[in-house]
Length: 128
Ligand code: 9YT
Image 1 (cartoon, protein in one colour):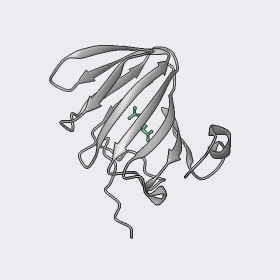
Image 2: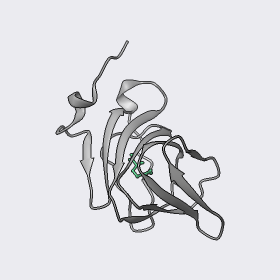
Image 3: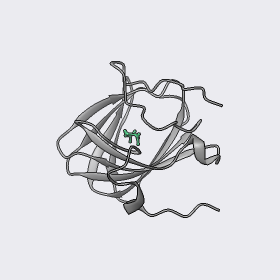
Image 4: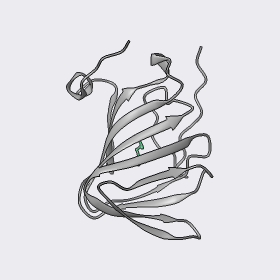
């Protein structure tokens, strides 16, 4: 059994801080669960192009306000209690009006240090 607290992750190599977001990666591939789980802060006023070509992701908002625009599709408001699941690898724009706190689950699990490339993609990292 794995027991962790957010405070065990903050400030470690599993705490990835970028210009637009700060992902605190609580569970990763090495934990052997088959998914990764992150407590992620999306910074206020940011817009991020994201395209998880190699992963499916579910995102559950627990704090803050913003919106998600599917490229070429609909715009959905985000507020606490809203979940979106990218089951079709949708390319999207994520906009934070205020800081948003999101619980993100990825399958396959992230290895740890992935950040988006210029297309908003995370690479698929194969490890043993
Ligand atoms: C909601 C979202 O995709 N944010 C970007 C960061 C990513 N989810 C992560 O690595 O936690």
